[in-house]
Length: 345
Image 1 (cartoon, rainbow, N blue to C red):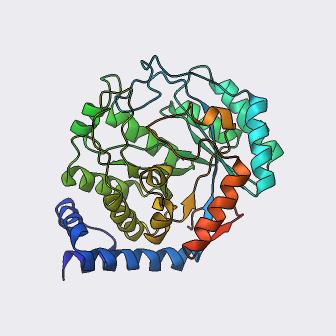
Image 2: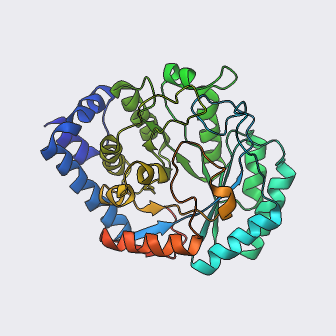
């Protein structure tokens, strides 16, 4: 039995086998075989539905100084902003009217948003939009903070691990951050009953196939409900400003691999894919993805939440964004869903 056949049959491999599987990316026949199996599994569990998440980027302040990030603490050129609770609720109201039934509150690790402030925001959203799911993406917190957010009503939590290799993690982050703590946060979130999302960058400086295989092993062990991956894109105000971006083709291959490894996972076709390739999100859906995350943030703030250069969808209204996405999704042979879009158990 080949490693490809073994993977398709059992959905699990060892690290050395993943390294071998990743080397088949450039074999068009095998890559297409992997893609077709990913699409089959995606349709088995989710049909032709593509779930939408209304993304609200509510603060671009961050206490961290991750070397690759455009809103890192020491970037003096960022125009910082915070949304008020009422502004956040207005974003939700607009999104709800457009058909969104999941909201994602994403921001830097901003100390201004204390546990008390976050609990208040969460409760207000859940009280007003009780039929909606609420996802948080606000970084590393204590177990107690995660517990409080969960009890306030948060349903899901996105925390990309970025890389599961400790050496590569160290090269991308300052010393006060650790991969061990990032992983512990993810396990704490699972213990508290969140639907958990992890994920990694594809193609950051120094990444090898072995590093990616380590990411797949970690995801295999964690079994998250959501996985977000996207090509690395450098930001001009970081030390990586002159580096090459990650590969769209490699990202698409990995989307298919992750779909086969975790058949029931919620898998976004990310903004980074669409930034790198005008048809990136459609290609992501064709590789096994089943989620898109259009931006509900106030239009004037979207460009200020610039994690990487040339981020798309910074000037469109949410309504235009949804109509545009609907046509794009239809063109890929799928249909936008108005459901909350929970992970299949």
